[in-house]
Length: 200
Image (tube, rainbow, N blue to C red):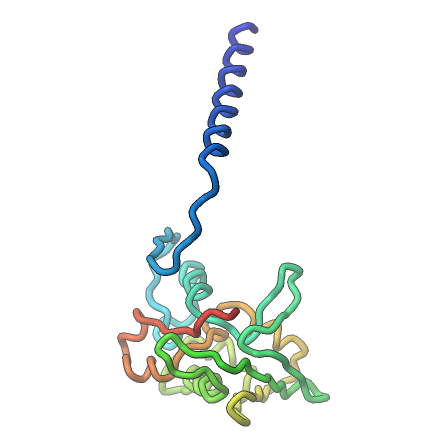
């Protein structure tokens, strides 16, 4: 009994001493912009071009969440909130959804984010010549139309009351990426993805 008590006392004393050292170290130095970070993943990432890889696995989805933005997102309560889209509305039959997009957003390659970029992305995924495995996940979308620079309309095959929620996760069918970079890099885009600048 005495040995156990002594061992417990030693462990507690060590923990208290360690905590004291950490507290006496003072405030941490402010973070600096730039640099790099290395993260471990459970799987190798085959790439981040949806047309090449189809659906993201969990590792690719984690990476996509750090690189790309989506039209909508979720808050800590699980409610749908604006991201690249500032607001949205629906037709009476829930088959047409109009999204008003955020202005002043650019892709990492310096090209502007706009309604044409959103419409182009969905048309690329749905193009049968691209044989995109991601097309299966958006078959309920008939087409996506750019009405003006910052307005995009989703025309659905069937009514959906949950479209804003469906667009919130960083899946292959939701991420928005640069049309210019994709066309310029061709097959190399898969390993050199270009998303939008982080939202404030």
